[in-house]
Length: 287
Ligand SMILES: [Zn+2]
Image: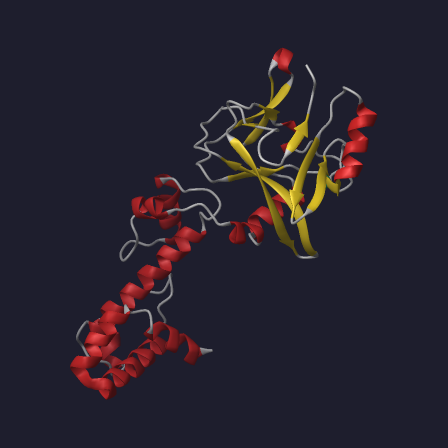
């Protein structure tokens, strides 16, 4: 394991820098340098939380007193810290204060990425990342999505509002219910006849399916009022879009409809999506 760490760490350096250095020193010298730096890392592991090796420690361990290894060690640690901070903010974009707090909690005072850089580098997760994201999988399983609250809108009935800001691309919650066939869903619509129907029809890889949130409470959450089914419709003001994902649960893959923020959503804004957009159609209360 150690040797593979050394191998990968020696490739962290940009390829052109390595080439230049190899030309300068010759292949033998460059290889020797990589081996020596590997030994340096074994002696002083460059983790996000490790302390930098002092000059005294470096020389005592038989390494040169100059800062060549030391600087390379610091840039490796910097990259690891950057990676750690970004990993804490994978689903939703971080705020300056959240990153500052994370840094404070770790006690990093020097050699640390700036919060504003972590914020600026944030990108929404890709579908592949989402489908295996442990945080999203847990939220689907326990239905304890954060940042959402039910609100009574009077004559319109209940809806869901954001109790925190969601940036564009954030996964807000799922449309929770048992996945049934489209035909079973259409039968349910007929049996309901003009009353409330919480059904989400979708096509996935040639399959005609439907999320049944009409059957309530669901078998898996007998005591929860799942949020996704309470989100209202708006074709003009929709701020969420439904996304079909094949989530990788521990017990296997399952079709899930996730709601993703179409744009930045402000605190207290009502969450809305367009039932009639794309291939997804959802029937709800007929006014
Ligand atoms: Zn459930």
